[in-house]
Image (cartoon, rainbow, N blue to C red; front, side):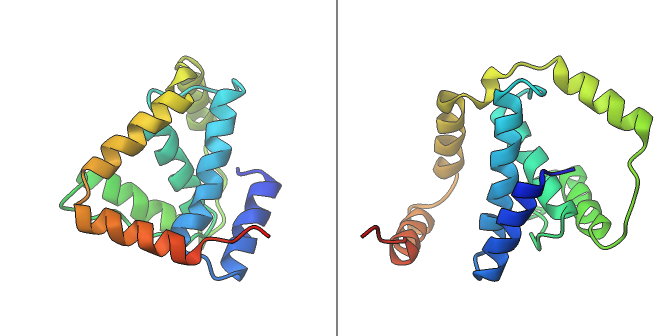
Length: 148
């Protein structure tokens, strides 16, 4: 279950008309903090991001599932399940929840160091075309808040 502050910040982002990926960023940030403070670990930065995205979808953020041609069918199915779980209340299975946390506790916490996250961002960016990266940068500069 996400923290109340995370839910509040995500709802505030939604009210301000920010994109679903920005709203999901709050959940990813929370997950990275959990790993850094030792609540549990993660095998890689990518796994920490995936956990955050899953939490976001379950909290009701309208994130589309990933492109089936670029990811595994298992990932697409999980994303659809998470989105569907947002509409109906459910109680997680205690045994499964405990087993998941036990497995995550055995993982390392260096997977979300600034170096690891930087490397993940570089590899993710390298998979995008120059035109996509340029468009994202232009959009970011146009929507950036200016400090006074």
